[in-house]
Image (cartoon, rainbow, N blue to C red; front, top):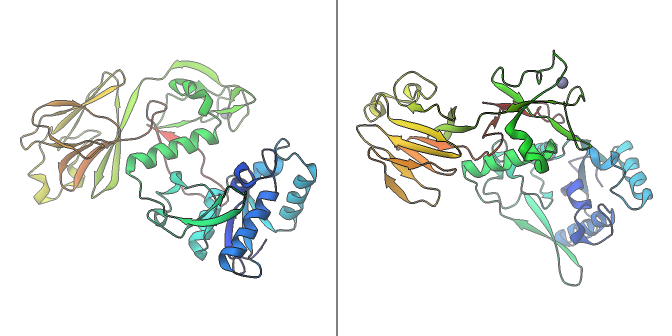
Length: 359
Ligand SMILES: [Zn+2]
């Protein structure tokens, strides 16, 4: 292990590697897997020795049920206390920041799909990740993998999944269809229907609790179904707007939540009608209707194109309504709760942003 990035040959996603049972060893976590990967790195670089700078999730040191051998947990704690490994609530962001600053590859099986928006250099990279593979004799070797560019909707799906995992909500997704309130009146989770932000509860010991106060959340009833749409200019998100069940939203040059005027110049303005498109959410089905003079191109997830001339069509995740070559409306890839989206909050490297959700 290296404690200085200048000495390291690679970064180690410690929580990912010790839990990878394909690398041999026994139990949910085993330090022998780190040793095997270290040997593989040495032989990849043909060096006498190779040093890894390791970053681990805090939970790897605090959870008691991961290592079958208590000695291994003590070893790991010793490493953390002597500064040989870094720990963070979630190791992903610190790992990626160090990789960005140093250019060192990360040994992991993770593809960091939920971080591609923040760390755009990951998209298309063929030297950021070293993936361990095991042959049929149990020999471990490391391989560079290419990270393929993800579509906007795939990134949204991954981000949402990461958030649900973080909150322990993957097995309790139905909980996201309801409003949950923290009994503490000053808590930002007290009135979930108010304000633009909704903070997700956390599952702890089978109960839904407030992240901040640890109190049991109170069920305030069903949350209305909402689809979230994004206005994209030149492939970049410039605004989001929600479409609630039973309340159609029009997009165009008229004022409103989907006013496109700020994203138009003198040339593009002419091709966009005052009410260009209408979005309707009926149950789980979102449709798009063209009301424009110039028409709209509907581009399906599979790349097929349809002229949406005055027609109504289903609008699914991954579909794009092209109003102008530089201006599109897409549907967010999020499913829960009724397609709410994470507001990205910038935070210091070792403190992941709070799981904030906004309409
Ligand atoms: Zn609270």
